[in-house]
Amino acid sequence: MNFLAMMRNGSRVSDFVIKIIAIVCMTIDHIGYFLAYFLPLEGAVYTVYMVFRAIGRIALPLFCFLIVEGTLHTHSVGKYIMRLAIVGAVVLVFQIVTEYALKDFAALEHMGNIFIDLILGVLFVWSLEQKRSPKLRLLVLIPIAIGILSYVCFAIEEGNSDITSINWYPYYLRTQYGWYSIAVVGCFYAGYKVTQVYYKNNPIVNITYDDEGNEVPVVDEHPEEYPNYRVLINAYGCAFFVIVTLLLWVLGMFAPAYDWIDSAYETYSIIAILVLLFASGERGYNAKWFNYSSYAYYPVHLVILYIIFWLIV
Image 1 (cartoon, rainbow, N blue to C red):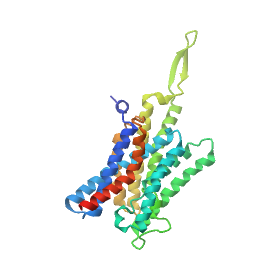
Image 2: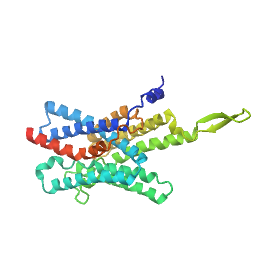
Image 3: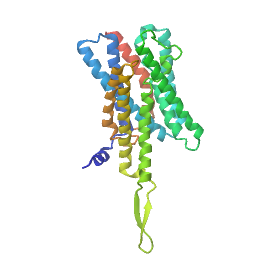
Image 4: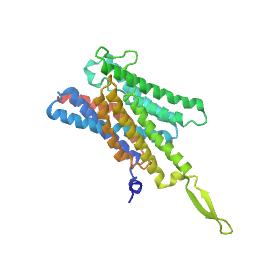
């Protein structure tokens, strides 16, 4: 059995399963974060911290993949952004309060707001899909610019001991992952586009017969119904994702102002392809209670984890 056939036969991982895996990895990552905040990083604590943060790297590409799937298949992009924005606003308000008032909650500072990354990811995909309106497609420059600016600000702060914070662009208004999260969204979106171009240049031709029994070749206008269509989307998207992740690592090595160890550690996110290569493109379990609960889970679990560590440590 060749590799494409293996991927096709294994493409049974729904968006629901991917979301569950992403949430679990994210939670493990944040447990590691609080371990580092409440306990000295030495011995077994350091080992657990490193392992948990490595597992946590898997979450971002899974969420970025889901953003692409959600944007391309949602009935209302506006409502989709609104749901993300509501939770993002809650996180934003809490970050501002902890930054300027509740110093006891310093552990929740500077974690970033992943919902900014996700909202900009939706805008990135939506704008590129506006084929009939070239002006709207220019909106893609907004997430790109914010991602790059966020990355530059983080790099300056980490690489310059004299600058602890860039006040005109505070951390809670930036993307959590700089340009990387926007680029990862772009990778999985590119997987769709390259697959469409492939089938356009290599059309599937079916043979029918006319009334006289002569063969008549007919180009299939719906290649998305073929099993390999989803397989190629996954393969191309994951290939682009690996390239961009390695680029982040290389950039970290040659950018003195940035911590290349952090960018190298991000390469653990490549493990996510073991899931994404077998994505089915189907929603799976899609109850409303689960969808709304998954949005609320992010801010709620952070507060719960903080309280648990605060009580037991």
